[in-house]
Length: 128
Ligand SMILES: [Zn+2]
Image 1 (cartoon, rainbow, N blue to C red):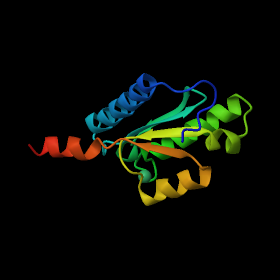
Image 2 (cartoon, rainbow, N blue to C red):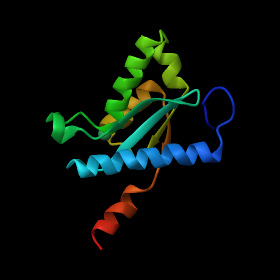
Image 3 (cartoon, rainbow, N blue to C red):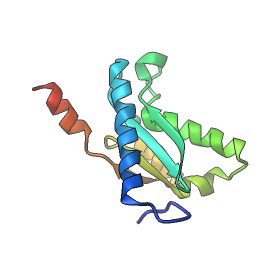
Image 4 (tube, protein in one colour):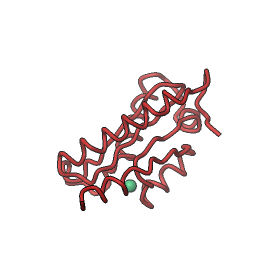
């Protein structure tokens, strides 16, 4: 069940968000990172997005999901929203199953997941 508030999310919007997450993953790959991208959608609005920034920042915790979580926290501060309520109604679109660190953080934030099974296909294409 999708928890985005407001009007129903159309299949086209969902597909567009998934495409954006894939593009974030491609950007990560082009900059020498593990190709993971994600979006966080609240009330039909993208309020956080991230791509892996581990090598760029030399910080092993800068996974796409953690980058996006920080953006959502900033959005909450700027819009005077309660993070707990926002995260509970936010859907994550991510290109690969989150690692244990990100999964734990997402679980703590009560974020819904929508995983795109693109990574495996993309990697197998690299090996062609
Ligand atoms: Zn992670």
